[in-house]
Image (cartoon, rainbow, N blue to C red):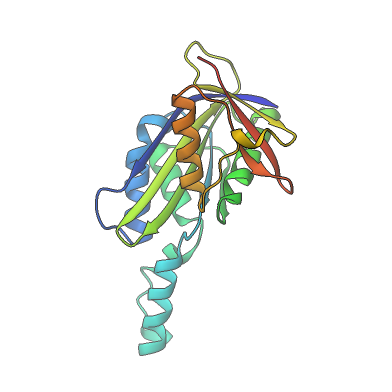
Length: 206
């Protein structure tokens, strides 16, 4: 399957936002410029729900679960930020949440290309959302489409292991995808993935 990067952007959060509800609201607002019209959403994340989970269970252990505040509980679920983003962007098709480090990006790209190949979606937003530190959240996203346009940033295709000089990998999916975007903006060939899960090549199309 070959797809095209119609748009690609990356951001860092402007302020302290640890709660997943705040992060997902900010992410949805930030993604509105790139994700408008997306028919499917794939989110790769490192710690989705982790902070709220710790807070919820810590409170429950201290006061007893019968007295635990139920409001944070939905945000302990890994797919809650994805649902919030999908709702804000009016994504009506499939949504996927993949939890992991850099390898989560490979799985998200794989799901996105499968959605395009199946015809279930013609525009898929792949987003990587991670809390890098307590003070910083990083977000990177690419909008993949199945039809070549006039101003596509890159062509995306699966392949065997690419040259080492083309491979980028960082600790998290968002850092890896941000590095991909930086190299594409410099019109450089870039690849992500691994031998276990496969490889994805991004070839500049400008």
